[in-house]
Figure 1: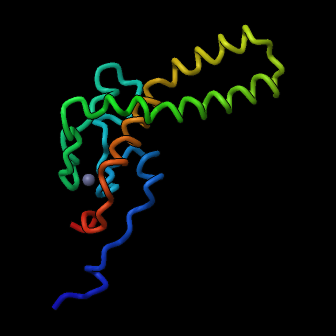
Figure 2 (figure 1 turned 180 degrees about the vertical axis):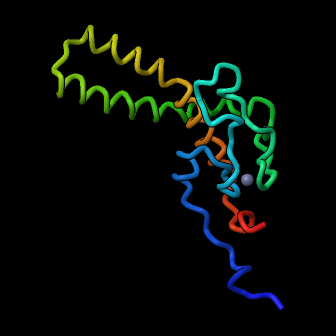
Length: 135
Ligand SMILES: [Zn+2]
């Protein structure tokens, strides 16, 4: 005798949350990356082969994440736009210090941007499946 309320799939967050929190696109529970620290020198960009929760393959095909470069462009543009407004309008910086600061900030944000780019990329190809969080 099963209770239908218990078997009813519970929706696990939104796609945007899954991307931002670097979660598996199928179950939205398993982590995409081995370590939560993007600045970990050896494992910062290492991903699980498969989702630790639903076993979704994260290495879909060889070179799959080359396309993630394109997915990270909008993130870079967004950061540059926000920084430009803050530095040029808010602090009224001239162009030379502006370019120095924006280069340093974008360089330091690279690990985060690469992770989010990969997260966006895999979310384009793998659909959410509400059955997995309750398994
Ligand atoms: Zn999963």
